[in-house]
Every structure is written in C-alpha cells, then in structure tokens.
Image 1 (tube, rainbow, N blue to C red):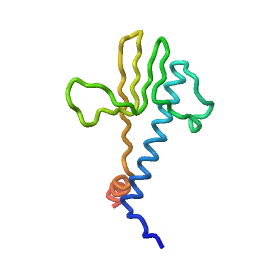
Image 2 (cartoon, one colour):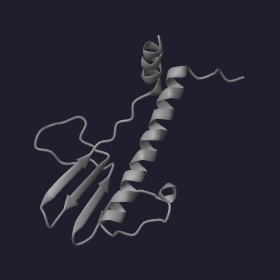
Image 3 (cartoon, rainbow, N blue to C red):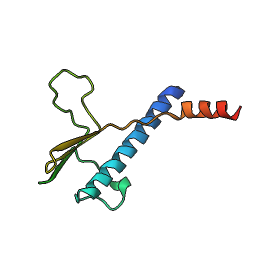
Image 4 (spheres, rainbow, N blue to C red):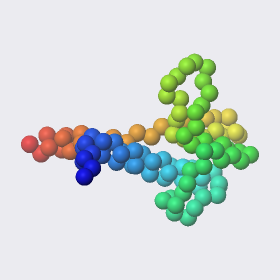
Length: 109
C-alpha cells in the first residue's frame, strides 16, 4: 500500500490547481477584451504561450528578459499593448485556506 501524502503536500497541489484555474480565467477575459479568438467557456480555454496581433501581445508563463539577474522573472501573464506602448505584468497569488480557517476560529472565539 502506498503511504498517504502529507497534508502540506496536498495543500500545495490544491493551491497550484487554483492558481492555474485563476490564470486561465484571467487569460480568457484578456482574450475577450482584446478581441482574440477564445473558447466559449473559460474552463475549456488553453492558454497559448504567446498570442500576438497588430495591437496586442499576450504571453503566458514565459521568461522575460531583464537588465539585471533576477531569479523569478517568469510572470504568469504579460500583456503588451502596442498602441499605448504599455506593458502589464500579471502575477497571480492564491493564498492557502489553512490561515483563513485559523483566523476564522480566532474571530469566532
């Protein structure tokens, strides 16, 4: 019989799954905003690493080039609006439920 995974390991997988789901929703909405082709339902959306048109470029989970050495230079989503010459870096953070439950217990007491 395989040993049961530790609770912390299960929580990390759960958080990663939530993170991926949220990133897909954000990507789907961005495709809608900029008039890019997308699926009808967000949960059927597969985020392409790079989508580019004349007006916008959307990068998902792609390393970005920086002037200095930075360990974490892989934002979840990068939106480059070519008309405005602006770049939007989106990094998604999903907190774990454990702390929320602990705080709720404190409030209830």
